[in-house]
Image (cartoon, rainbow over all chains, first blue to last red; front, side, top):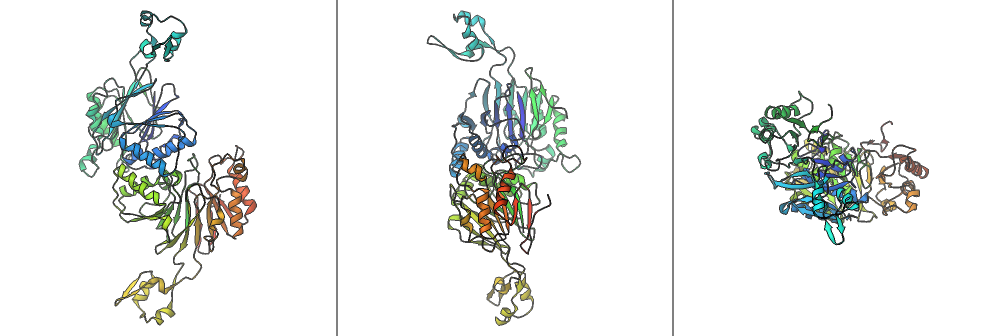
Length: 320
Length: 320
């Protein structure tokens, strides 16, 4: 599974960083999931191999514009690219009304169905690849984090159970092994009942804007990766001229250390942090502050950075 | 006065062209006007010297998403940049409701006032620099073109009138010459009444989506430049697989020729026209078709192209 960062700036875009958007790509490389959709997310996608046909679901963490203003344009472009498959959108309830109003205002009919799932009433969403759950966070507006867990990590057939249930060896076993449900003379056989994982599932937690990382403690159980905002360093946050509702690098790093997370990816940096060291506040200040508190693998996201999480749960960043 | 193209693709962005947006920059270089605001217009602005503080007014030609989806993000970013000056927006009435709904949904309070002017009831907008008028066009939804006319082309004082009206020579003349209205012992003196142009005003006409260029005949009277969509060539339009409501290169060029326009700038090209000749449909096909019908200066817009219209009405394109 891969993480592909489409935007890593908070609030406004800069020349180097777009506003929030993260693609989570299935192990197969075919399907992918979009977490947040700031303005120009569809533009960033043009610089990746991902297509709007491969998009399986969109999760929006909260209603602030830098996390959702790109949604109508992306949905309209998927329509112009003749997408037909329904699209699931897990988002705060207010997003649905706004998206439908926007598409109606601009007279943009879509050739595919939008299936909204209000995060306020959300339990879980799943397909054959992933299980998505949500955790309420703390921000100026309701905000959520999403955990993505591999649904069937390298499954093998549960032979003992197949034999116990009297399922005849043959093509049916093959169907079930490939993840397909089977109708056996009126008996509905669910593939999931006959598959056993051969390793622990990969699990990634992606937080929305949040000033209390510890709210993700339970979600991070069994996770190999946490992606979390680190909008400021402590020094800037304490200077008090910042919007409230965000985490500092130290806060997130201390939390990740406390739950023994092996990999921490920071993102959503205030535009005041520059990429060039020595010119005012530097993104390296954020790295240094987090590294001081966290002993695992620490990554500071950049636009178009692609990270690979292998089946053993090791996170690979490209050589710099 | 300069034209700076922020987006020149129709419908969807490409890697080389963003969706619609054009900046018209005042002769002074300080203030500017935005015509259409497709998604990521604010991102394109980061690649220009223009700031959201210098923006004097926005004109939206019609409600289609590729012409307006960038508006909420741009307005929110102007707020985050602490703009305080009210902003005039001339747009179809539906845009106002949608913008206000969007800002409310995302809980984005602006520190400046939005002053909407519904194009449906629009007569004219003016400040000390330009006069803006609108012309109804023909498209799948109501669409407008906008004419920008220099308000005071290199003015000189009308000495005869000043003397006739008994305005005493002195500082008051200076105030009026600088374009300021003056209160003379209870008598309101309007600068405009005492200024004479020393040359014809520059006038630029910028069309929205439109399949009948001849609707701009009156608007083009006295204009040096027409900017108009040329979404397709005749061959593609006649193949009939295109959306209706757009103009071909030949249609626009024939119209421009018929009214004797000195300069024609084409834009809003279908993404199927590639920049590299020899790879399927080429943008050069559009150029060739228009050049066949139009004998004036022909420019095909590109993203970030900046054209200068000098005080003599000559259009200067950068060397290629």
